[in-house]
Amino acid sequence: MRTAIYVDGFNLYFGALKNTPYKWLDLQRLFEVILTRNQVVLVRYFTAKVKAQPRNPDVHMRQDVYLRALQAACPLVSLHYGHYVRREHSMENAKPPPPTVRVWKNEEKGSDVNLAVHLVNDAWDNRYDCAVVVSNDSDLASAINLAKARKKVVGLIPPVGIHRPISGALRTRASFIKRLSPAALAACQLPSPVPGTTIQKPVRW
Image 1 (tube, rainbow, N blue to C red):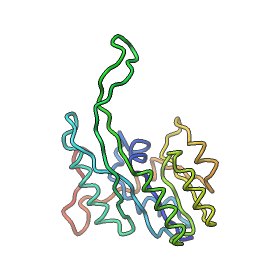
Image 2 (cartoon, helix red, strand yellow; image 1 turned 120 degrees about the horizontal axis):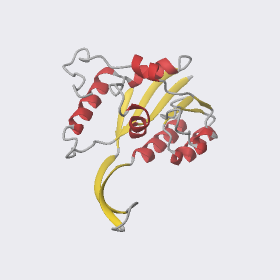
Image 3 (spheres, rainbow, N blue to C red; image 1 turned 180 degrees about the vertical axis):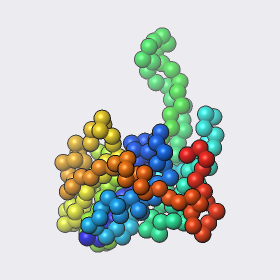
């Protein structure tokens, strides 16, 4: 089946890649390995450009290197951007006094909406027979329903470990579910440097 992959980048990062050595991930190769009986025809990667932070001043540069590597090495991967917001918030203090504390909150905006729109639009345009959603965000449930209403198969690859449950709203709607294993992540790393370029994996990765 012609298969399109829809990757919630931040969900993938925080669910399966953070604090691992697998962040230099070849997305195209990964899904070709996991979905051996499918013909992967496109991989849409939804993310946002992060901003430098006092405790992580070069995070945006590492991300930029990775995004350029994906574009150079993975012809089936397309990038779709939301936006990244860092705001100061007042939140309830778990151990008062004081009753509230001021904190910095980092938020990624737009990727879930962008993913849902492309999932449904590509179904209407008949760009796939099977879609695979890489996320554990229950907000995508309605989009999955709409794609299935177009007689499409919609699978789920939730980026969650064994101690984190799969969203019930997604689990009950998915045509099938596959797991991300550390072995698959380890086997599907981009080369460094990327052939034909000077792009190399950041040292701190």
